[in-house]
Length: 357
Image (cartoon, rainbow, N blue to C red):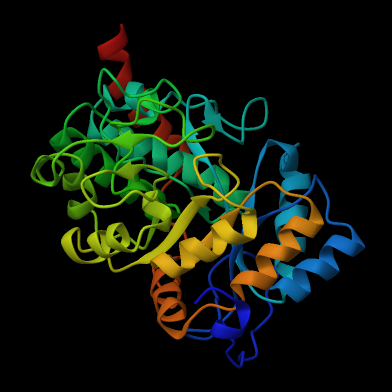
C-alpha cells in the first residue's frame, strides 16, 4: 500500500457539476487518495491542469484562498470544474482563532469552548448558521467538531478549540455541532481521533506523547469519538499513544485499528495535515505511512507544486474500501434545510443574552 502501483484502479467516469450542491456522483467512484490545498484566490490554467490530472477526492481552503463571497464562490465552482464533478470543498471553520471566513463578509464566531458555555442548543444554532455561510460560498465540509477534551495541560494551540472539559460535555456539544452542520448541508469532520487533549506540545511543531494507560483512555478520551462514531468523516491526531505504538496515530496501524474496532468508527478516515512537523520523513513518506496504517485519505495543505505532485504520485487512487466509505460519507451531504437564518439568529440571541447580560 506504499505506492501508486499498489492502489491502481480503473476509474469510472464522473459526472460534472458546477453547483457544489448535492446531485453528486456515482456510488463508490474512485479518485486520488488526497485532499489538497490550492495556491490563491483564483485557479490559474497550470494549477487547473495539475488538479485535473491529480483528481484529488477533495480540496481544502485557507485564508490565502478567501477574500469575498463572489470570489470564493467562483473559486469553489472552478475547483469542481477542474475535476469534472461536485468534489468536496472543505475548510477549517471552528470559531475563535480557527476560522477562514471572517468579517466583514461573514460572522466572527466564538471559540468552541466559549460557545459550549451557552449550552447545546446555542452550539447547534451557531453551527447551523456557520454551515449556512459555508454552503452559500460553495464549501460543503468543515473540519469540526473537535472532540478532544480540554484539560489544564492541553496545549494552548488546541485548548479553547475543544467543546468541554469532560467526556460527557464534549459528547453532547459535539453531537449538537454536527447536527447543525448537517442541517446546513455541510459534512462535519470529527477530530482529532483518538484524542489530542492530553497533548502538551503543538503538533504543528513536534510530536505530542500521551503516556496514559489504555483503560484510562477508554474511559475518557475515546468516549466522545465512540459516541459520535456514526458521523461520516474523521480526522486522525498526530499524537503518540505510548501504550500502543512509538509512531504517531496517523501512521500507526495499531491506533487505526483501535479507531476502527474499539472506537467503532466506520466512516471515511483522513489524516491531519501531513505537512505538520509531528510527522517524520518527506511528505511522500508521511503520506505513504498514513495510508499503510489504514487512513483512507491524506490531507496535504501547503506545499510547492513539485511536493504536491510527489505525494499524489505516491498515494495513487483510493482503494475500493476507501471509495465505498467515501460514497457513504457523501450520502450524508444533503441540501440545506429551509429554516429562516434570521429566525435562527433571533433564537440564538435570546439564548445567549440572559447568560451574558
